[in-house]
Length: 231
Image 1 (tube, one colour):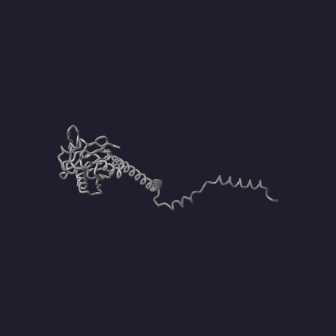
Image 2 (cartoon, rainbow, N blue to C red):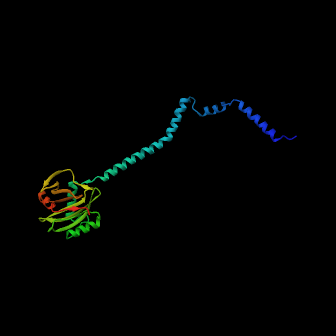
Image 3 (cartoon, rainbow, N blue to C red):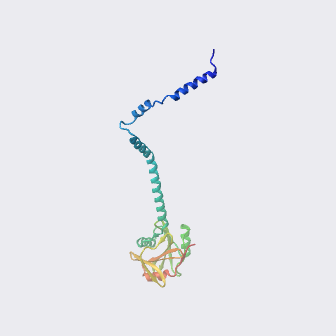
């Protein structure tokens, strides 16, 4: 007589009940686990091993985080440095003067201050506007760089001596630390290098430097009649 479905279900239920009553034998599992572990493996050893494994996993993450922090610090430092104006050293300014007088470094010949302004604006559209004293013979102009900051220069003659007027954004180029002097009510930073005297000041957001082989007082007198401003 065939067994009914109900009888099959009852038989399976009885077998499952017997399995629940029997204790779980972990000896085989323990034996295999111990075979994989070192002989002196203890609970403490297992915890230490686990920590090492986790540390090994986290080390690349920590290294990546450290690199990210260093990169952020470096980027912030570069941003702060780039935001600071560059100091125009007397030695560098004297070298620019010598090259301009010698018609080097792509110096452009001009015959008036208007031509000089137009030529500088073509090479440096954001250059400050500036004026030179009247009745001065303008010879040339050029655009230089000081610490990757642009500098517009115009060379003319004063008392038969070549003099150069340099103009820059005061946020990008500033006077070096040096002697400050009041001349005719104006405050200048004065400097000298290779017998080239310089008078520097900041006015209307523009840094200017007038230099040449004239006395500081004569340069300051000429600088007092020049003005520059942001366009």
